[in-house]
Length: 102
Image 1 (tube, rainbow, N blue to C red):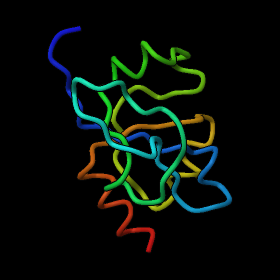
Image 2 (image 1 turned 30 degrees about the horizontal axis):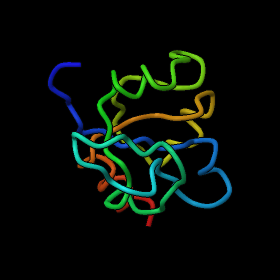
Image 3 (image 1 turned 90 degrees about the horizontal axis):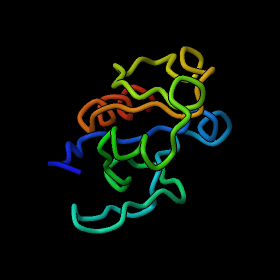
Image 4 (image 1 turned 45 degrees about the horizontal axis):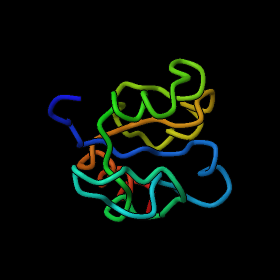
């Protein structure tokens, strides 16, 4: 794989429904380390940061479970994207969403 574009965090719409925002990856890795795809954290600052192509290669299911296109955060994000298991946004947008939801 070429240069990674690791600037996206993954929001689990499914797991955010009843416990607040749930971000994929309970640890953040370096580029040369194996990505963390397990567990969820409530703070996007602690979540793993992904390259969209890398995540798709690891999980597939584009268009059904995962929306592999960055979205813009809105207060109704959980309702708006309820047909997806997981959506992605930049870390900056995740910070904005966290602020919106408080």
